[in-house]
Image (cartoon, rainbow, N blue to C red):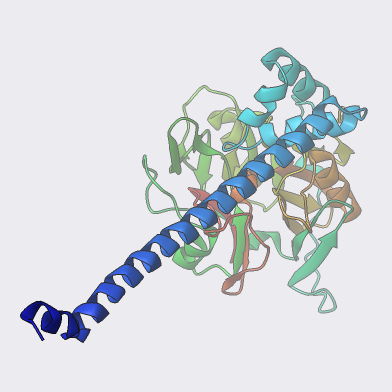
Length: 357
């Protein structure tokens, strides 16, 4: 047999054969993995696109559908947020948005609380709990109400120092004062730049003005040295004349007065959108009411200002006003947040809080 025939009979090296198949197999696996990733990415992309189209359709139905109330609620609800307020501008002109806001609100007033209408119950009534936690629920909302028998336990707590940066959640402010409970307080800087550690308007602690300009008029909610809730538009000097011990302030569009001297304030239209809300009130016997309404969730869309007014009247408030809301809304009691704040990262930080000793 010649050399050429012999060479044809020599088997190919098995390792070389195996190596070739392994290389092709790796290439096939890599190509398969890339195909899988591509399919997953395409599925996610299509799903997100469908969600966006669906959301746009829902918003379009709300705005252009037959229900004027639904349109107003949509516009008001998103406009009251700092993150998604722009959604209303997609469907409505700014002029139309302003008209909707004006037609669905609680009107401001020059009236100030008459503290003589509140007579604090000093009798030792052991049947009434010192602090009572009540679940509240309506057609569009659920939340927590805290009723405090002794109004002298209410005070304003703050972060260590106001600054152009982040504040603290109510739980941390409460721990700073060794407080048993509380809710978020007044307004803070929130716009193109947000400083949750910097309040807006008048803040007073134990009779001392710690924020606000002298001579400016503010939308004030405060507690006096004789432990009566006072709400009204006033300067720092007028707040001192009204014997105010602690106070915060918040603009009427965000935190309107709900009840003054037993009279519910005038409500136009729906009285605001549906959102998380915080409110503060006092009954005729002096008991303090703190209210935190959850919102922007499937089981609790939120409450309007009109809803808050109804709740406060139901529980006997003769003076009441609204604090900051949205992701700021939080109620703390005995070591934990007892409502469900709308935020995947927890409650928003704040510069001030209404606390309970």
